[in-house]
Length: 114
Image (tube, rainbow, N blue to C red; front, side, top):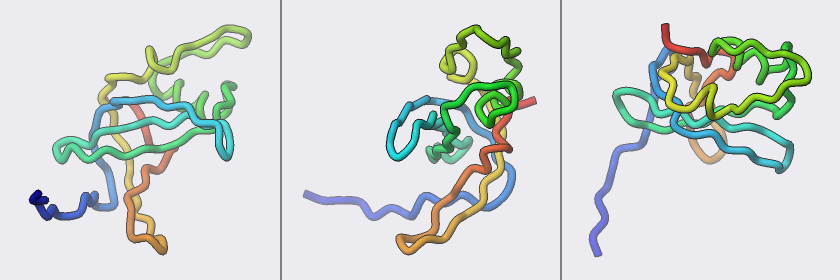
């Protein structure tokens, strides 16, 4: 078996364009909604998470508002219908950990591409 050595997936700090290609719910350690974005043109996939609390002023509510959704108390919304497949822009900051350096989307910067 042969494996190809590839260069690391890196995104520079700053503004990027992409497309939302997935939405994942997770429960541990907290209830979060992870948004999977594919950066264009590199195809690098990166996630950003939002607490699964939906109110007009919550991080998730503000995200939906940036994507053009009016939130009305007592109603239900489908995150996939709001976000999936949408072109977007976002800001990346690289974060250094003990496992290496990884790109991180600033969650407040994710918005529909104008």
